[in-house]
Length: 453
Ligand code: UD1
Image (cartoon, rainbow, N blue to C red):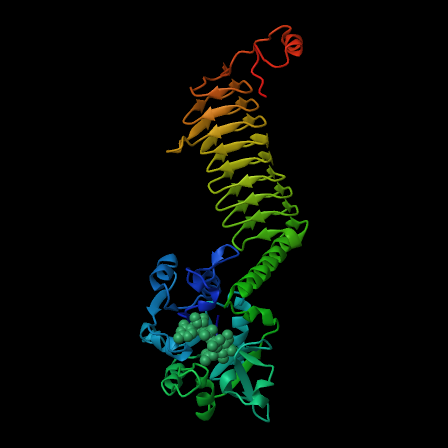
C-alpha cells in the first residue's frame, strides 16, 4: 500500500464486550467460515504489508492474544471507554511510528484489502487529512455534510437531530489518517456525549475545524462493512464469506454444482477441474488436489489433504489428519480419521478407517473396520500395499497387515498378517442337515439352532 510510499500502521479495535452474542466465547473468537472472526481483519491488515498491526483487546484478552500470537502487537484496554479511548490505548505501541494509520474493527470481517487501498489512493489524490469509509447501512454514526457536500462531522444516532437521523450515509468505522494528525486531534476529544465515552468519530469535526480536509469514500458494496454484533449477523457474515469463497473457487476452475447447498470455509484449497457436488461441507484448512470429485453429502473437516483425481462419497466423512493419495476412492458411509492412504486405495462402502497407514492399492471391502480404540487408548495400524481386506473384517489395532495379504470376509484380526498370506479369523461354518424341517414339526423349541424368538 502506498500513499506516496508512506508507511502504514493498522490499529484493530477488538476490546468490546460483545454481550449481544450471549456467548462464553469472546466475540472476536467466534468461528466464522473456518476462522475466528478476528482472523479476517488481521488477514486484511496483513495484505497491506503494514509496519505495525496493533490489536486493542479487552474481554478474554489472554485467549485472544494466545490465539493470534506473533501476528500483531496486543494492547489491553481496561475499562472500555469508547472507540477514541481504544485508539489512545494503542498510542504507546506506535510511539515511534510516523506515517498513515488505518483504523479497523475486529468484528467487521468482510472488508477487502482493495477497499482500503482505494482509501489510500483517495488520500493521496486529495491530500486529505482524514479519509473515512462510508456506506448506506444501518449503523449509529451519521455522516453530516455541509451545503457544498463536504463532510463536516459524524454524529452518533442518540445525539442526532431528527433531520440528521434521516441521512442515509453512515460511518463504517474505518479511517485512514496521518499518525501525527491522529494523536493531535484525538487528544482534544472529550466525553461529553450521550454515552459519556471518548468517541473516535469526534476527530472528524476537530480535523475540519483545524483546517484539515476530510474525504469520505462511499463503499461500492455496503455489505463489506457488515459488523457482527449478534448471532444473526454472524450467520449473515458467514453466508457472504461462503459466497465469496465459492465465487473465487469457480473463477479458479473448480466446479461447484449447487452453490446454494455447498459450504466451503475460507481457508480451504481446491485444485482446478475438481467438482463439488450438492450438499457438501468442506471445513478448516482442507486441501484438495486437481480433478477431485466430491459427491453429494460429504463432510470434510480440519486439515485433510486429498490427492489429485480422488473420488469421495456420496455421504463420506473425512476427519482431521486424513491424507489421501492420488486416485483414492472413498465411497458411501465411509469415515476416515487420522490416516494416510496411499495412491489408489479403495474403500467403497460402509467402512471406518481410523489411525491407519495404508499402502498404495490396498482395498477395504464393505463394512470393514479398523478398530483403533479399546475404550482407553487409541492405537495405530498398518495395512501394506495391495492388501485386500474382506467385507465386515475387524482389524483390531495395533496390527500390521503386510503387503498383498488377504483378510477373509468376516474375520476379526488380532495378530499381524504376513505378506501374501490369507488370514481367516472367524468361526467355521457348520450346516445342520434337516434342522428346518425338524423345527417346523416342533415349533415351540429350537433344539439345535441359535434362533431367537
Ligand atoms: C461505532 C461508531 C459509529 C459507527 C459504527 C460502525 C463511534 C463513537 N461510533 O459505533 O459512528 O457508525 O461504529 O459500526 O466510534 N471498541 C473497543 N473499545 C471500546 C469501544 C469499542 O475496542 O471502548 C471496539 C469494539 O470492539 C468494536 C468497535 O470498537 O470492534 C466499534 O464499537 P461499537 O461499540 O460496536 O461501536 P458503535 O457504537 O456501534
